[in-house]
Image: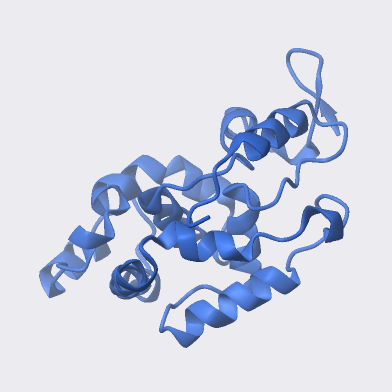
Length: 200
């Protein structure tokens, strides 16, 4: 735990960089049902692999511009020319495999939407039972993140390993992983309680 600028206790990790505090207080752990935001986060978690979240967060607006706000219906139309453009864009992480994964995953996302109605309806099926969760911030995978990762890979998704998927689940509110005495934990819990689960 750390004491924030308002004197209230928060998760220790949000003190690692100045920009983390707002992200921690307003985004991390709050439930999301918007397909483009879910696809964005899965994509950015893939880009983070081997890097720090600070690097990705600092470039997030550039990523959004480069990938049309992660609208997968637009990304599926990307051509070799777009790939070349992205590989020259120093505002993002210029990793060919990760860029190609986003383009590939956009196609897979569109297929999922056709089958399930929305990406959110599919993903929220993997929400863990809160009663069975480990203590906050002690795990890097879970049975549910392993199952979701396996299912996505079976459908042809790339850069969606169990650890990447677990970080995604923490961030998108499928898990409330704020530590017990964190001031934001109760706010997130209220948001999760009032959240309408997609497809239910």
